[in-house]
Image (cartoon, rainbow, N blue to C red; front, side):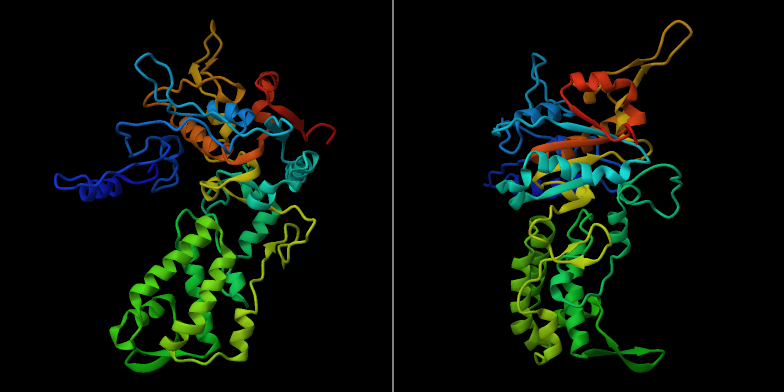
Length: 438
């Protein structure tokens, strides 16, 4: 519920909570995870206001060590009448070996070592041998991935600056591939809606029509010409009752495929269903044979692929390789990882800078004072109608920090936290400094 806009909530209320409605609705969500917004900013206040709420106490994903850290990043604790928090992050997962959260310090010279340092920690705790590694994998996430062309970012860092592999993969994004397996895996996973996955499925169908050299007729400057199908023309053809297609089935089918790809990452399941659709309904609708070229495009079986982190090439995953996926916090929302590295990036400022809010300006007599600082194990006291950047950072880190089952890493620019290193250690973080002896 937490990410619904007000108009969406109003629609649900109008349908299910009217005077004549006999429906009972249970709304489940976490207002502290409401990070989606129409623009680039993070939604500090959720449009959803819980009513008659009950609280789910305990996370089976998080260990007590990770939960204790995440708890300090809770924006709204839902205090009761006595001022005690109703909302407490409580980790129920118990590991054979306790793994405390790790903080990795880096700078511009050592940021290229972050991924290898993350892999080293994974191996140190033998996490690659766990069932969670196979089920959930490992991920590096950041608030901001790429710079817009008109943004002045000299000296500031986002994912594309820190990870050369991410930059190459982003530049290598394209819409045409030589197999249906690639279409279903190599789309923009950083998008926050199903549109990127929907586009990938439709593009694969358009590619099939091109293989079969199928076109539609249109008029340009009064002259009839043939054109290959676009996504819009594909949908238009299927929607036209004269073509005897099942448009309602098609809509539901495309939505189901998009949801499985973007949310559940069920690439192989979608591959099987899409291939079956092509070999039956789609083939009949557009009246084409299954040629040898089309058989090659469809493939005999699903081809699992990843992006090579070192040269951007497509390759099969090696059995002994630790695959690290890199993406935004938005792309990781709702996911579970065996281990997560959250890397701070610049949006106005870095997260560690936004969290540290000055409560009183320095004068000749008084030094500047700071509000409580979540990164060093203090419960924040960010002010109502103020400190919006700090609250945004708090919510993004709350979402990002609560992904892993075993290992949480936070990569921070050392220059931003150098004065607080002793306090960070006292808060329970294990520190690894990449800048020493660099």
